[in-house]
Length: 184
Image (cartoon, rainbow, N blue to C red; front, side, top):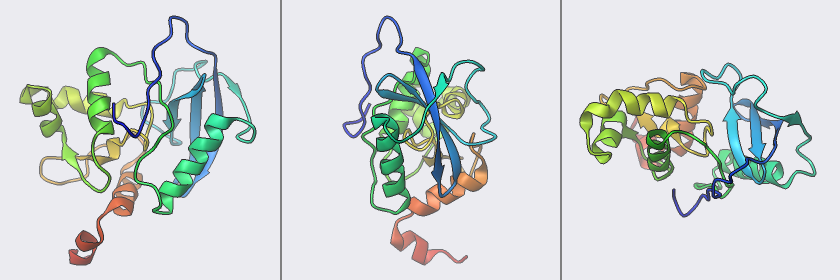
């Protein structure tokens, strides 16, 4: 967990879920909330969508403080005005996935890492494939920045929201000096 994002404590009984659609520069995102925390943020065609029946009732963005905050922070991010998110999240993964997602949340804006580097940080370089599975199942795209994880050779590798979106997110975060040095 990072200081720029909060995770509520896991209650013994989960709050009812609700969902809405947020329009963004990368297309619509389905946002799923659980109480006052964001539990999911999914692109159309997402590789690992939420389970049928798990997203709760549809609600309007207006009048829902969490969804309004999520929309505002995403808009600021896409305009280049925000580098960290404060919207609380509730991910409910297994212990290993939660560790990986916490490490993802700590990747600074404008930087990337690899699956192997995360595995090494967890104490076992042989966990890279398992790290990749956890990264791919991150339920809160963008806010927990799984797009910042690339292949060991610098290539863009899997992204549950699509490689074109991953490239656009990385391009948005690219430091100016890097963008100026590119040949294409």
